[in-house]
Image 1 (cartoon, one colour):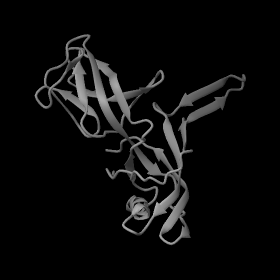
Image 2 (image 1 turned 90 degrees about the vertical axis):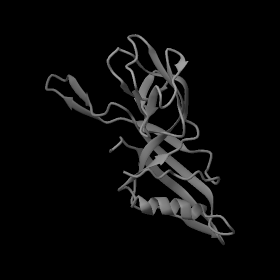
Image 3 (image 1 turned 90 degrees about the horizontal axis):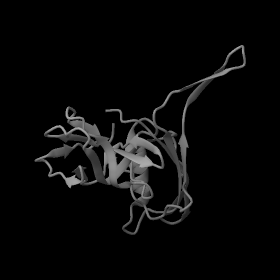
Image 4 (image 1 turned 180 degrees about the vertical axis):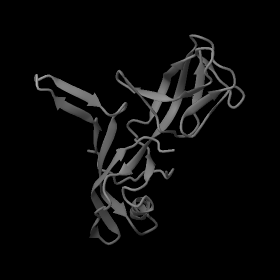
Length: 201
């Protein structure tokens, strides 16, 4: 499992595609009744990006950054972390409620009415217990993967919230990536596709 971060590159096309996908097994009984089984607890988000300009000279290494990440991951084999600039932060997001026993809780984020775990935090995050900011590490700590550990179990009914940024864990969908050169030291990539994956640690 890699903790490399997908580079923030200025030449990205604004019209990126992001699609939530699920996996469902469907069987139809002799009676005609349909039986369905979902194989996932959270959606798999599929990204399709395009880069109109990737500079590869004159003091810029944008092409090298993207190709370097792709080759380090060996295509679809290994994963990486992606900073989705349009979906990367939460404010006062509730992630659990104290029960007086548990001391560890995974961070989550909500999208509409759906709640899903995050893959990793991006920088420092703030943890609150019943609206009170918790000192770190005196009262709690947060792992890179978003697991909060309290020194003392939160009391029954205490709301646990957090504010901060997060990253998505992804892998490329293919083992090849096409680049087109249209001028000296200027390249483009018409289709860069990757999909979110569950933490494999």
